[in-house]
Structures are given as structure tokens and as C-alpha cells.
Length: 230
Image 1 (spheres, helix red, strand yellow):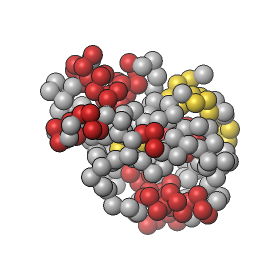
Image 2 (image 1 turned 90 degrees about the horizontal axis):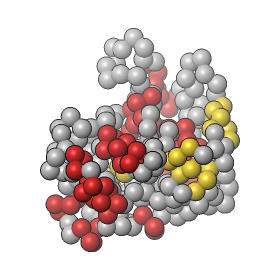
Image 3 (image 1 turned 90 degrees about the vertical axis):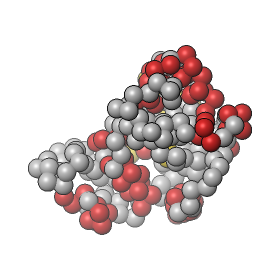
């Protein structure tokens, strides 16, 4: 794991009554996303999370479908995808770790290869957006192929999207637009206008993905890595 020193960052959205600048305490992050072999080993030792035994409430039918479509050895070092939030939480807990919080992930992901905060670099932002705009391919790179950032964490951009522990705090608090607790300015095009930094479109895309996600979803472009308290 890599140590992420604590610091401050400005969240894309300012929640009502909260500070615009958020302080993130020091924590550890896995250097790489969890790969297929690691997760497969977990399902063998904790069989309730295997594809054969997973309950529908915890994952969609596409859960771990890559193991049916590909030879395990060929994809062993690729990031595990088609895995639900429930299963990712269970995996991290089995390693005496946890999923990173949204703020921890966003804070660490702002680091470029040479700076703690590369978010003001036009080149850094352009590179991220270039990856976001690419169509999904049949194959994924190995987790070790992701570029390391300032903290020594690899592939936070350019490999797969990643889960966070508190994904359901992003943008919305419920599934209905009629929810009285929702700020309707956080939807669709109005969301960008109400953001602290409307030019950070890459971050807006991440928040949009999280706000549309539910804990049993399994997506072929969404993986995870674990974190740990100091």
C-alpha cells in the first residue's frame, strides 16, 4: 500500500451547510486495483461471494461474467470488474481494509505524476478526459500498467472507474427527483452550473456515475482498490 499524506481539497459540489474545502486525514491506499486472480482467490475461500452462490440481492446476473467469457490465466492480472459494491466491501474487509471514501479517492486522484494537486494542469485534465471519451474495449490492461501518481498509486485514471465506500452521497440522496431532500440543481446540465468548478468535467462525470449507481450493480468498466486507516 502507499501512504497518502493528509491535506485539503475543494470538492466539486459544496453540500449545504458544509465547508467548501474538505480536510482529508492521512490514510493508506492500495497501489493497484484488485485484480481478477486476487478476487477469485477470495471467492474460493469465502464461497458465499462466488458466482455460483451469490444472492441476487447482492449482485446482478452479470456478476463476474468475465470468468465465463475468458480463460482465467489470460485475465488474471486485469482489474476485477463486474463486481458489486457489496462484494467489494466484503473483499476489503477480509483483507482488514475498507473501500476508500469519496473524499479520499478524489483527493488522491488529483495527484499527477509529479504534483500532489495536478487538477489545475490543462494537460493532466485533458489526458483524463481523453480516456473518459474512449469507447470501452474488449480487453483491459493489467493493473500494473497504470501510470503511478505522486503518491505511488497506479492507474487512478485510464484503467477502470473505481468504487468508493460512500458512493450514495454523491449529488443525490434518493432515487426520486421528487425527494424533498434533493437539490434539483444537481441534476443534468444544471449540475455543472452549480458545481464549485464547472470546468472540471472529468470530476463531474465521476459524480454522475456514482449518483446513478446502486450497491448490487455490476459493470464491466468498474473496479475497486482498498484503503486502510493509518
